[in-house]
Image (tube, rainbow, N blue to C red; front, side, top):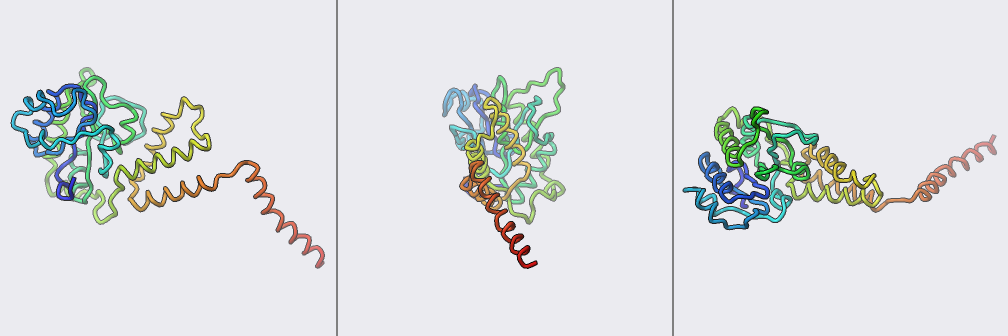
Length: 275
């Protein structure tokens, strides 16, 4: 993705889509409202897909530019901010916003030079908790609880519409990073996560082991609230590296504490002699 693509609306990311028809319909919905950047993560039937091309109607410019990734981490690596769309409470501590707020926020972040992605999950069960953990905020649509299920293309259509409607001077004036250092790319943030989690693994922090996945998700959610910049991520990784390198055993810690006490004791004796 080149610098010229930034600010051209959100990147739509479909995670493990199962039907080519849904990919094509999502591409068509994007084209209706001026969005062009579509990324696929592990599409079930591979890519390219004839059914997707047929369903996209005249949205060939979207289909022809599709990027395919093996992992969600790779798909969001160059993004500054990510929304995860879900209709269910997942127990993940993240802010929850609606499509109108998200549309205006994406416009403002784009104007500030930040690139934003919106994740959409599988047709049957949506996004998994580990995938939601990579996002900064949860985006949910105000559907009725009795019939809350939406087709992927329908959800993309609503989000794209709100982004289009938010294209006013008032929306662009929202203070999402204007004049400030932009948030770190997701690739850098994921590197921080993995670095910290590796260091914590080496000191047996995640106990009991079966709770590690939920502890990791919560830790990532906490860190993402900071919207760290690139230099801040580098500084934090330096802290983790220093702590990891300087790990000491309990015996080392006891010996160091004893060494710190010895000079004070010697000083006390010297003071007694002078008296």
